[in-house]
Image (tube, rainbow, N blue to C red; front, top):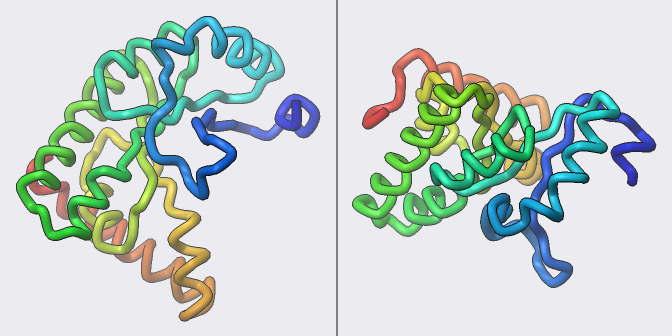
Length: 172
């Protein structure tokens, strides 16, 4: 209702339970198809670009496409957690899923974005995935800004993303 009243350029539909402080996974676009279809339809009819926050999974990409959402945001939380925990083998497996999903999304005609849990290091690496059009890093930036200020945090993130884009993502 808020989006229809305000009419932003875009909205990202994200699963979140009342008790959660942050989203813990992607939206179930397959199981929730019948519930989501009229929501995506109303938003789209109002000229609002719709993005689905999903797991890096072919079924979720197909489900998003069937709903008519032109954009998907791939959930990067599991990858970022494995990186932070130093579980390199598990992190690489998660990263490979994100790379494959970004490529498949493009092939399907979807615009892939990525986000959740990204920091300077993970944003630098993931920025190297050429298929990704956008990274969602606002939560981290605001947290970092408490310590360094918003402008320095943004500049440092932009530099990290530029390095990643220029280098390409190892394993991508």
